[in-house]
Image (cartoon, rainbow, N blue to C red):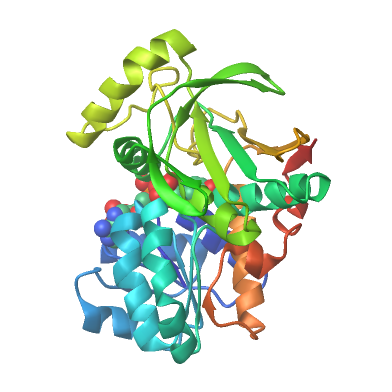
Length: 341
Ligand SMILES: NC(=O)c1ccc[n+]([C@@H]2O[C@H](COP(=O)([O-])OP(=O)(O)OC[C@H]3O[C@@H](n4cnc5c(N)ncnc54)[C@H](OP(=O)(O)O)[C@@H]3O)[C@@H](O)[C@H]2O)c1
């Protein structure tokens, strides 16, 4: 079952059905969910997140729930709780640090319930983990990994804009010497394959996932800014302040100082790719880099569907990163993802 019939939820449900998986959809608004289900030709159920009994009947007989309702910092706690109670595997496509921090302490509970909880089974997080593993093959004793993500302009869905605003409001977080810490807003300039770009520190799920999955002690993530470094230094504290007061990032291209990695609304005009660049370095100065890119949300749908397939075939329990579930190279092998380095 895919919970959340927004742009990405519909794409995942459609990809799951096309892959031959027994598919249904769910969500909080019965009219919207029924309409989406009719369009896809699949069954549906509806329950809001604040109704545990409703969520229990929503999940009855469901083997895997894919949460596509975002921001997932809001939706994941209730849905993971319902999955634990109902014995249903949980997958989401979040790249939100809060979701990972909430999920990880539930490892024992998930094992007791015989379920697997997998945050981050989308382009953001799964692909970053894949690139990090590739880069670390060249510098196996790396002490630091730096992630830089660029997301497309164009139309972005309400879910992506709300999620981006929450990430912006949360400020920068990184892992240093294995500890998650708040990072100052120091803007850095990176030489990316597409040219020099200013990067704004951000606390995304991939910081946590890459640190967990690789054991590298220092991991930091940046999102590129459409403004140069000088303007970014001025604009980012202001943008973070606005985001904290409830201001939502606009949809028009070029107006946001930093953006979340969710691909553009597939219905919108922007087919510019989401890009990720990963650099690893060790204490002797050895450095290796890798990158990946994909346009649209098809790749996120394909990764989520692949995660469902793996969970259906059984053999896992606990809380896993998507890379741990799929295997280090699997996300990069998804059609539509270009990678190199
Ligand atoms: N990892 C990745 O690469 C990746 C890629 C794309 C998107 N994403 C993430 O996926 C999420 C969805 O994106 P989207 O483009 O599909 O957004 P969208 O089209 O705006 O849809 C958002 C969906 O979430 C539901 N929702 C929001 N808050 C809810 C709540 N409190 N309770 C129940 N349902 C709720 C909405 O339900 P209603 O229709 O009832 O309002 C809607 O179905 C975002 O968080 C985005 O950042 C991740």
